[in-house]
Amino acid sequence: MTRFSHDGNLLAAPDACDMIALDPAFGTRFMLFVDTEEEFDWDAPFSRTGHGVTALAGMARGQAYFAAAGVRPVYVTDYPVIDSDAAAAMMAQWVADGAADIGAHLHPWVNPPHVEQVCLRNSYVGFLPEDVERAKLAALCDRIDERFGQRPLAYRAGRYGVGPNSARLLEQAGFRLDSSVRSRFDYSPQQGPDFHGLPIHPYWTGPSRGLVELPLSTAFTGLMRGAGESAYRAAQAMGPLGGALARGRLLSRVPLTPEGVRAEEAIAAIDALIGEGARVLNFSFHSPTLEPGHTPYVRDEAGRAAFYTWWDRVLAHLARRGVAAASLDELLRAVPTRARACQAA
Image (cartoon, rainbow, N blue to C red; front, side, top):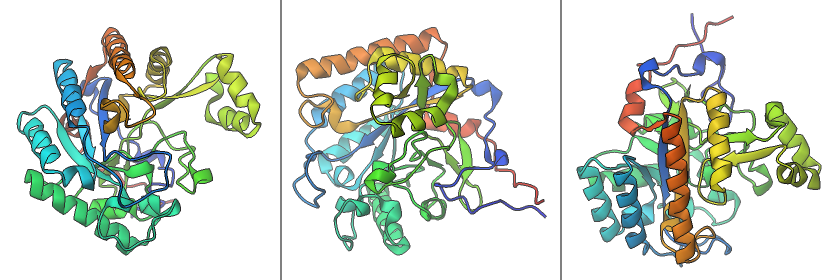
């Protein structure tokens, strides 16, 4: 008899036999997931109204840049964007051209059905009642299907907000890959999920282990990086010590994103992750960053120029390290057909 030690809850650590051994021919690759979402005031309380979908010119410029660089982004897309005729038509053309893939991204406060109170805790869809999470996921998938004629295969919860039911619901909805786990981050102080101790490598999740989890990539860098997550968490608990270690280049936590991360930090993180044996480097950013004035990361044209300079430097370093871009299809083809169940004790 074989059995798994838990039901595939995305907040639970996988067993050793849940870890995925990618096809050796895949090599070490990188992927780009774009959290494709409405523009809203990041400093204001969550609201069902007061947002826009206007950053289309910035998105088109970004897509042209990545296509020229040989990168096929996965645009995990939320309800207001997919509900915009202009945005949906633009993205449908990218898909038809084979230049991008579309996944799902769920912001519960702007995703029907609108039945829950809008508040901080409820901004994490995985913490809503199971029937509400299921209904919101169904509404989003149905709208994507209407727009593109295909169901999404990849998912990322808005605010990384998966919960105890999410993997099961994603399996039931036909998803093949989730990328909501932000390894080495803990959002419990903001009433969100705690991902500490979870792997940086892909693994099987869900009740039948039919769902691939591809965590976002985060590295520890600096002279003390070998001490890893436990040392980082201990330093953060001691207040100013964490900042002092980062300033002294002793220990920093660096996610692979151009948002708030300097290029030299990202390059050090790439090297650290390769040193840890990472086979997939998972980059991400938010789509409104592509147009100045919508996020804290690109406020003006100078900020937008810096954004593309960041990518120029990072892509050049990836090329030097022999790390090529991978599409969603290429990754899924490198995954074994099914998970192995753990042997019962």
